[in-house]
Image 1 (cartoon, helix red, strand yellow):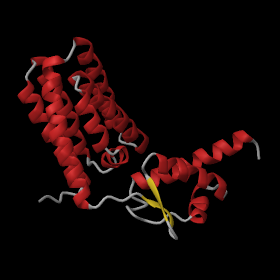
Image 2 (spheres, rainbow, N blue to C red):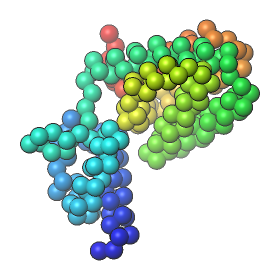
Image 3 (cartoon, rainbow, N blue to C red):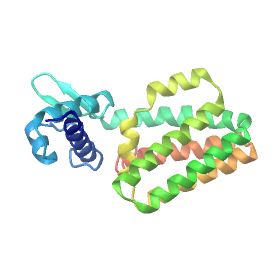
Image 4 (cartoon, helix red, strand yellow):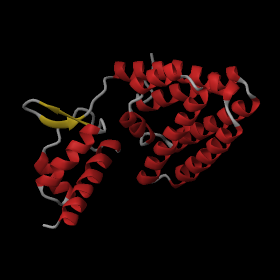
Length: 219
């Protein structure tokens, strides 16, 4: 087997496993037997092991003694805490950003919002991955505009990238449209330099994502 073939097989395995995690085929906490994954991806077990190691590094998979690989799991209480902390921290960041944001940041945010809306209209699994990627850049741009090193350090310990990706794969068309509207309203608040408005919209935006991930369950 050539090196290029090995890479291609590992990529196929990675795409198959990651896709199954994001679309719910592999549920949270589910075991991921190598032989089953190899059959699903049409590859041998060696590229499956490579794919699992990469997914573990990205936070999608964990390894447990005597159980092997399994889908990383978050209890409802963990999700609640993560998103409540995000709502507090990111709303504060949005308020700061509204008073410190440069015109160039606004241009970047508009472009990212355009890109998310375009991908959201397509609605395919790869398009939702694109929405998640652009959304991460959107939030990161706001955080950079807030210019608070302490806030950035705190958020880096709170935000779970796999959780964000999984959330977008659970959105209904209506929920996805509301999320896109939140981005536009955040832009309007930033253009107005209104920190209270920006903080309020960001809090709503983050807590709406929490509700989607928890399937509508609230306290």
